[in-house]
Length: 621
Image (cartoon, rainbow, N blue to C red; front, side, top):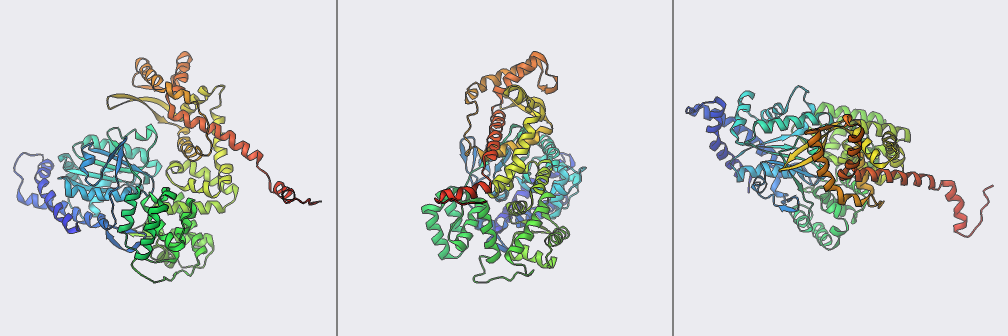
């Protein structure tokens, strides 16, 4: 398949839809003139042509200078719905299930690549006109602008010429598949409004197909606002698919053959967490070439990736060693990247125009007190080391996990008081990042004791001091009412589900508790009242019926008193198993971490124990 094949198919799709679109725009049953059809058709043709040109090409860590055709490196990444595996080789496999699709997956698993494939596949296998929207663009829009403004500005950027009023009317035709890429890249303070905007858009123009991608959503309330959407989870790379991806990569044949053999025999099984992720798999190949081994810890993995990028070149430029224009050595450049990443991460900047990029670089140079030219550093970051890549008029990280890695490096170098202040800022202003990003996971690998001392223990103390009560069910109720104002009955697939809404201060602890539960549950095997889970469904149904009969479709946590409150406390503890399990796990973890701190030997204790260990007595007096 060639780009020209996709372009030809797109022309036919526009031609097949344009009469209907014109009639809807002008709200008439009369015959539409050929002149009008030609003008409107050309507007959509121009957008589609430019969109295909943009989204059918990509840059990778191995192809940093010249974009390559997407299908030169693409392998089909399947998704799951419940326990059912669904192929993504044809978008109809998804739209046969639902016209409202949510695709979730971890960082680096290839969500954007899959969305681009589905965009192109829509042209080849359906009669819908696809529209691709990068949701991160909403971060730079004013609060007065909405999702239609974002869609229209995205179209105009790629040559669309009809006025906004006509485009909004065209949406009523039901001729479009709209792809919203990377909801997780939307700033926290804009997410709730965006959810409502998308829900309204879907309600207004429900005959179209809508596809959203995001990092994983795990809580019930993460799905509130997506009530129409069916959630598909991206699969990790199996060994066979990973081997197919490696085989497609343009790389030194001898190195690749050796890597393929060892990967098939042992590397995949030994490093499945890396090998099953497309981004990390490419880094694996690069670091294998450089070091002939793969580290098991994720921060060491990224460290080797950086060193490889600093010292190596594009896959198509054999034997050429680039010069670093800024004259900074590997360590200095790494420190500068940590300042740059920390500044941009805390400012929630994931893409940069030329002016902002140079501003961040200049500030990083000043923090590090380096004698370096901003323009030369920019050239190194973008062209030589390739931590950033140019995407039109914007610059983006080759993958945003690099921003998180270098930010983690900065955090590890600062003092305890600075760390505590920075963690306070992240908790208050970047709360979703605690669970969604790999920053905290890296810090847990890099400086577990300091992360526990400066972040995990203080925030667990705050939480359990706030919700303190005589019994665990009462503590749990206090936690729920600290986090949410209302319990909502949501009707989904002919069943009744209880969801929390009316988010309060305590909701910020949800991502925090999810993070520590996921990272610590294999270290600490706490028994968290497993007997309750057997009663969970019965209690959930009883509580739902009680709310329906006594409160209607929603219950206010602040209006519970006396016997009603006690009934809710007892049944909530048994009903909301997902929340209870993480809450009680955190309570047990806090106790263990405090004991760990009090029993940990000091440096002096270790020194004094050394003579006994080697059979000598030393006098320190």
